[in-house]
Image 1 (tube, rainbow, N blue to C red):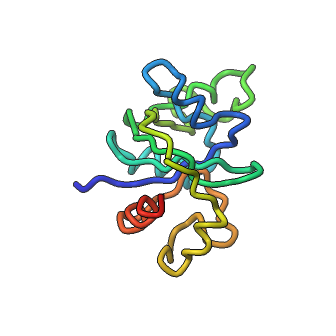
Image 2 (cartoon, rainbow, N blue to C red; image 1 turned 60 degrees about the horizontal axis):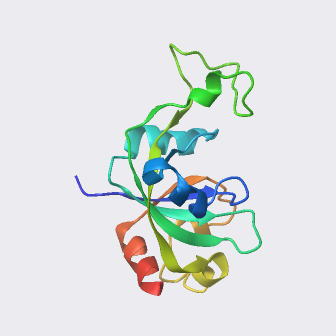
Length: 155
């Protein structure tokens, strides 16, 4: 099966590409996703080795700041069971977990950030890219191979 590609959003004041690079083994669980579609992508479609655009959102200059890869198959997000954690979900049971995550591993920073504004200037070539669709707020979304290659060529 061919490798898949993803865009994963994070708020850099919570967790940034720099934070990922500093982690032991440059790997971190992608926890806290509480959207069913994003969860389904992680649980049902992501595979070890898939490429990830690491996107900074809700910041002064949103954009793609680095590359990562999926480093594990999906497993239950432990934060859903921890009543003291801000991602706690009282409706989720250990025997029937509602939320899943994957581990992501740092690959590299981009040579320069590819900002959302710059990506919008290439909307014609990036038609269908979920990031550029109005109203799309998913924290995890698929990226077609041709979009992956096109975006990397902008770097």
